[in-house]
Every structure is written in structure tokens, then in C-alpha cells.
Image (cartoon, rainbow, N blue to C red):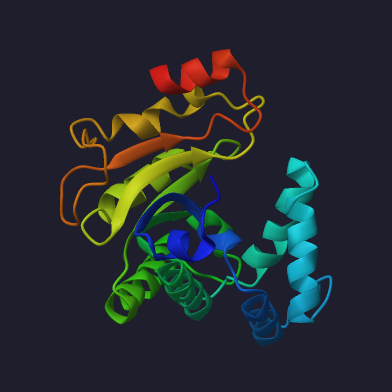
Length: 230
């Protein structure tokens, strides 16, 4: 059965796994880089940059794929940049027929120019809220802690603090090898009594919050089982 692209685009869709620092328009990357005086992009031509990102993401190499994030994160170090990226993500997804999406990011990666974690989260939420008002698309923000960093408890507390302002989940992400979830058990314990049991994300203002733990990209059955059990 051949699916019609136009029909697929028109169907209402829900997207539950997006990365805020992985959805930037190439033109936006170039403009933000110029504003930030960041001179390490492989090219400043949007079309060439788009091809560079595409090639890196399709080489079958996680390390090559992650090279692109070094550039996107580098240009997302201000409140204005974070808000713009979140807003444009909402706009782009709405054009693809998405009616609800969840996007995630690690606030700790956006503090190089002095932003606090709270400022970074607030900026992203403002962009998502503007997108909701302008394009009618609902969304939620997921706070990521990194397995190889000792900040998971702080990120978990941040997710709880913002759960009534648009944060819908907490995620444990990053390199899995050598960083089992058991090292971050304390972070997950603060969600006791707050974990959502519904299939979809709880409504804004709910006491519930969703938990996620990356355990697929470089995982083993043992690691995946440990992630679920923890």
C-alpha cells in the first residue's frame, strides 16, 4: 500500500520524542551563530549546512551524529535563542500536522554564558507557549539529566519545580556504557507519589510527572532491564 504524502501530512499526529537542540532550522543556526560570534560552523551557507547535518545523521555512527549537537548547543546559550528555537519547533511541527509534541533538553548544556538552569527552562517554555498561542499546537517540555554528570538530583528537582508551568517529564540521557541508572536512583526517588500512570502526559497543573530513561542506543538486555527496574 502506497501512502500519499499529502494525506499523511494532513493527519493529526502526536510526537513524543524530540530534542530541542536537534530541531533547529539551518538558517536559524547560521543567524544565531553570527549573533553569538560563534565561528566554528562547518559552513555559513544554510543549504550546505543542512546537507552537512543530514550526512552526519545518516552515517550509522552515533559519534558522527552527535557532532551536530556541538554546534546547535553552542548557539543556544541565551534566553532569546532558546525561546526562538522552541517557538520555531512548534511552528514547523504544526505545519506537519502535529497536534501535540514533547521536546527534551538538558539545561546544564545551556549555561556557558551565565544562564541559570531556571532561566534556560523558562525561556524554552516561553517559546512553546507562544507556539501554542500562534499555531494551536500543544506541547510539553522534558528535563534531561546526563548519566555521566553528577547533576541528576538537581535536574529532577528542577522538573518538579516547573511541573505546573509546562514541564511534563524527567529523562536520564547520555552515554550508557559505564553509567548505569542505579547511580541516579536518588534523583528518581523524589518523584515518589508524583509519577503519572496515564498513557499520555498529564495535563498542565497536574501533580503527575512522567519518567524516561534512555536505554536503547548502545544498550544490552541487562541495561534495559536495569533501567526499567530502577
